Amino acid sequence: MTQSSTNGYYAGSNLEKVLRSGEFVVTGELGPPQGWKREDIERKVKLLKGLVDAVNLTDNQTAIVRMSSIAAGRILIENGLEPIIQMTCRDRNRLSMQSDLLGAYALGIRNILALSGDHQHFGNHPSAKNVHDIDSLQLIQVIRGLGSGTFQSGDKVNGGPMPMLVGAAANPFGDPFEFRPLRLAKKVKAGAHFIQTQLIYDMDRFRKFMEKAVEMGLHEKIGILAGVGPLKSSGAAKYMRDKVPGMIVDDYYVSEMEKAVAGLPKEDKAGRRDAWQKRGIDLCVEQIRQVREIKGVAGIHLMAIEWEEAVKPIVEKAGLLPRPTFT
Amino acid sequence: MIVGAQKPLDEIKKLVADAKKVLVVGCGTCVTVSFAGGTKEVGILASSLRMASKIDGNPKQIDEATVQRQCEWEYIDPLAARLEEYDLILSLGCGIGVQALAERFPKKTIIPGLNTTFLGMPTEHGVFEERCQACGDCILGITGGICPIARCSKQLLNGPCGGSQRGKCEVSSDTPCAWQLIYDRMATRGELDRLLEIQPVKNWSTSRDGGPRRIIREDLRALEDKD
Image (tube, rainbow over all chains, first blue to last red; front, side, top):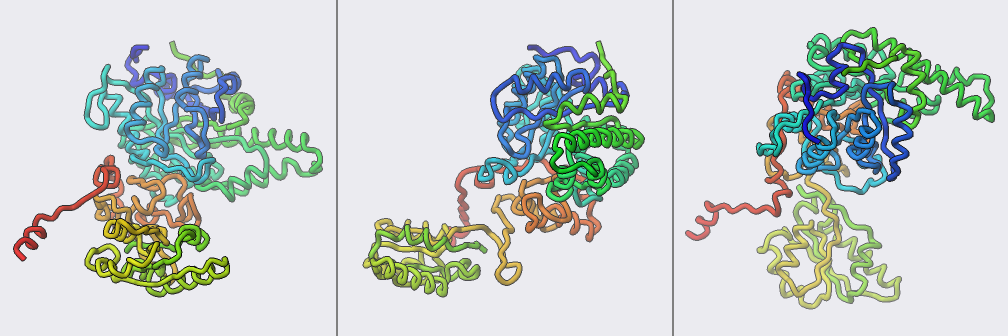
């Protein structure tokens, strides 16, 4: 594959076109399998195609070994869905990252999300050595460097520039809270094009974060996508509230999920599951309505990991269909 | 200082299993301060091993010695004659002490009784914390005197990851987030704007990544020649 014409766009990806058009952006997420079956990816592709503008492919998410996000991304392209490749700084040094980025570009991948990566302590190889040769902010710079045709070393990339749209993460629920907008500003300065936030289950704190970001003018320089996702059960909400580092879950969400199954006996597992799923989807639609009203939000990043079936009813109910297309 | 922690007794018992005469050699410097390999710990370990070997029905001769610094020739050279009668030397020095003994006395079997854990300090009685990774290119001047290379689980140079919450690291609620500490200190000093500067990719060649390190001080060598 040769470099395609970008028609005045930086990378020419669909995601970039939607961002630039000013339409409300919808990105999705897909976890590659803990195995080699491409059918596992293709099944999820069918559940997302036409509903989102591009899809994040996680990179050994929660430090559990999964199919390479780049290989999975190529499978998405072959199935007509645009990938956003997540790349963490945990597993590769600068040589390996750049080598993989060259390959990703050659395979037609045009969106990359630069992340620190969950610590390997959480995953299924906790005794692994981690790398962290560079951090996520420096990875943004490295990707932008390759976009100009230059390796981190200063050497020139054979074949010339390889512009890819660069995303980064922001967690308004991490601490120190006051530093979060400043860290976002640093990511903008490093050259990121878009931001996806951590799942938002504390709307007040997210509003405060966005107020600061808008005050700093960051929303004019970068597309900020608010992270949303459907809760599957009250247990899942409690788990995220109490156990997941860097997350805040307002008790509202826990109690709403509890109310959803009030009166349903524990033995009625199917009934409870359906009630939870219905409420989870409705709450997600409510979140989308709320974030759309917040100044500076350019779109959503919808994370329905291992529940891709929920994406369709959510985007439908939120009035986000059809997705824009470009020729 | 170098902080060490004694290996589990079962592991040490296995390591000394084939020996009849063992000399336990402590070190009077860092590992004495971390209560892992000084005279006192040498005494306790030696008597534990004596007792264990008696219970196992295979009594060993276990003797004790502690030198001021196991990592300097002048302190370990005087051991030469004494080591002769032992078939195994159990060092309670750090990894440097073990290697110094092994290099000076290559015919002897030298085994480690400690795990060398980190470069750090006692923060309160009985608590030792890591402070330095000896990366060879100190950045404490720009991080408020708190090292993110040694104290951030991801060695981040540009601020906290998304896992920092309520001052703690995502890896353990017992571990303070280094970047929270840095933020707080810079805020106290009114120097937060310095954290907005993007720190470039680090040169790790001064760290272990550049291969084993060595310093040659020609000025000191020249002085010795004159002496």
